[in-house]
Length: 373
Length: 90
Image (cartoon, rainbow over all chains, first blue to last red):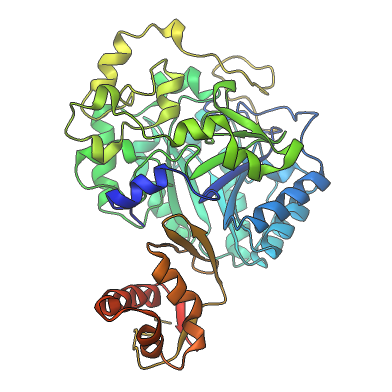
């Protein structure tokens, strides 16, 4: 899937429903990953009830949202997890859900394997326990591998091994691909973003410029490795990567959080990018009419990137990465491959970085992933 | 199993596993089974795809619904959809 320039302009103007909608089912999580985008840990007492969640599925089906990316927190912690997911796939709203695997036992794996239109992504952040557990917490890698074993034993074909690319995991790409292949699974890589608790670890964990160049070359050679369009800021390095290569925030993607708040994308859980809530009148009016989404769908100015010959390749990069590093939407991506972002960051005071407006972290020492509960 | 190559002399229809959603530029088509997402980039193509199953052959549908100068382009679009199994023989 790729979009030529004419179509891309149309997509930036918005669609009748998202192509890809992320739905975080709960802020509760039994892990405390240092880079958690949603600063998850404790359940929010105001999370959507089962009845509200099922009604939301009905609305998404009526809007012909083809599938939802279900996440959290750890979505399998919700007691009605299977009720919600089964209702979705029966309504032809496909489900791709992300899990840390800790609740994915043999019985759950068999139940998942029996469902059509459902895909599972099990997260690890390295090809070995030492690397992955530094980010995700002691015991988390072994738990994820047990979940993968259960899925494979249940005959679940083609699940995903999902990895956030860090300075450490980027050195293990071949081993991660081999790990996925050993299960008949697919590898899915995502960009480390300075969102949620990721704000605190982004400087230390993000790949270096040289690593990003190698990552781009590695991905170009492997179009079968999934990226969820997450590395389009690297496209000016050469060939564009698979995907739409644009920032989809509020245009082709959005996020519904556990309390029904709608944000422009999964990486900007912050008051500045909250478009509304599904409780008053459903999701449709928020998607179609919110002031924030209208703003994001207006033709974007290339801003500081206007004089760069590669603006068409990266469209200025990731809105969330800019916002949480204190840059303006019209600035270059902080990881701009030509270093324009680095130069801008160097003159941007760290104190100007926005602080998260929503945080469900359990009390832990900052930067410590804690222990598996 | 490899998808059938597009042959306009055969009967084609939208796969029952595909959802179509109208959009300002045409429509989005999503195949729930193979998870392919395809952009149908004109309303004419959307109309053709929706009504394909009403005709004995894809060639008949092209003849009836598409202007002569556009038929080669639309046939190519159908071949792409056939390769992605969004339309099938049936």
